[in-house]
Image 1: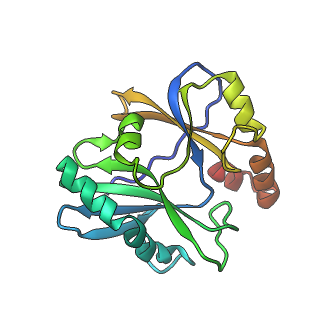
Image 2: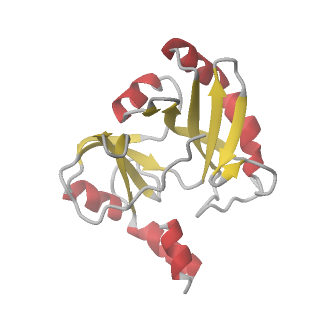
Amino acid sequence: MTPYPHLPGWSRVTGLPCYVFGKLDGSNVGCLTDKKGNLRFYKRGGLLDDSTPFLPEARALIPAKYGDAMAKMLRDQRWDRATFFFEFYGPASSFGWHAAEPHTVTLFDVHVEKRGFLEPKDFVKLCRDVETAPLLHVGNFTKDIADAVSNSTLEGMPPEGVVCKGSWDKRMQMPRMFKWKSLAWLRRLKDQCGDDEKLFESLA
């Protein structure tokens, strides 16, 4: 399975045309499936096993919520295999930590074998009938948009921030992607990490 890339933060504001999606604060879970309906589940770093509290719940949540949609997409698009990426989270989830409470999963990206990650326009079109990470803006990522995310004033955005997906990058063989976090979320993360700068950088 292709692991989900670690997205860079954007150190400067440009007029890059992109789709701006809300970034849900949870844990990344991948589901590799094929046209026969076989499923394998992954977390960052390898197979999803029982070593992570609560995260194994995703093995039941994903097929229950998205199983029919995944099968239909493979069938209609004639894909042999694809990995669907989900955010696993609950009301109290933050910084990869989860409480003992009801959780859910939300689709945010798709990687197709021998093709790569879907461009954002294709993702939006193909996934229009299922719940996905919220699409907040289509157009240039301007200073006004960046400031709105930083100040948590962009309409509909989750507390963490946004993920921006642009045109195809031939060198990387995937759409250009970067993240932009809210200042309030970063301050909470800083408080959580204390003096552990390495941990802060890995989660920011």
